[in-house]
Length: 363
Image: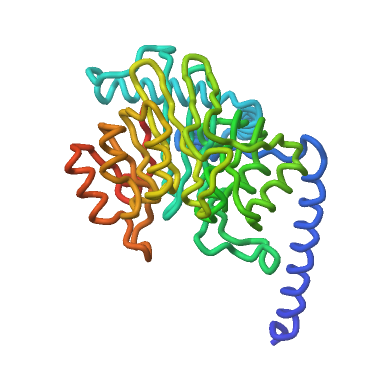
């Protein structure tokens, strides 16, 4: 009989305590070194801990230091990033037992990798260089930007997808973060990435005044991340990998943010990759006219497979062997278009779609 009276009071008390707990937790995160993000422990560690506790309980051991030691060891490994070594050894043994004849890279091989994350109707590409540098090109984002003022607990692709992937790969910092252009489906996740990781440098394309870009640059200033324009003619050397910016020109007269997308070409030995952002016909025409060498084995299909991009002229110059289309399932634009898929087929290019494959990695 007393439940109707005590129930609301208990709920109110629980809500108040939870609010105070959240407030103090948020307060402590402002202390330097008190807040650390890390990947979810692997299934091996979770199952191992459960098995250890089952054995401890089954034999009725009174050694309470055993579960305590496991928890301390787990937290220590997470904090000091020691688990990748152990999990790497586990995966290597597992793969060897599963298929000992499978081709693998030689130990300590110098590998350049491109991972096209599945961020729905958007772009996000993680580039890992042979010298262990890591670049991130775009960070996805919801097509309709959420209102952060109204709700601080909104779904954020930069937090929920891009950051989690980087944490899972034990990438603590980004040597370069590049925003191809300031459209929401490329830039929406950038703020979360800048907040969650140490970023050595932010690069972005010249664009008309834009609220999305202004917010990103403000966060970069607050985090003391150097930011600068990226334009055609700029080159970078990351170990044995050369990176050239093919677009946009510093004096570009193109109006559309898509047409002013940053276009990058990576060259490493005999391999090359061309990443084209959301380039469309006018931008492609400018790249074709100005760039001397567009030949690339790997092509990031422009604008999620829009029929206005990836023209026959570009495919004739680039002559790619593989193409990646970063696209969302059931998107309202009909991407990838039948025209683009037909062009790829005519040029004998093998396409890979994130909506079918999930994250796609080329090494």
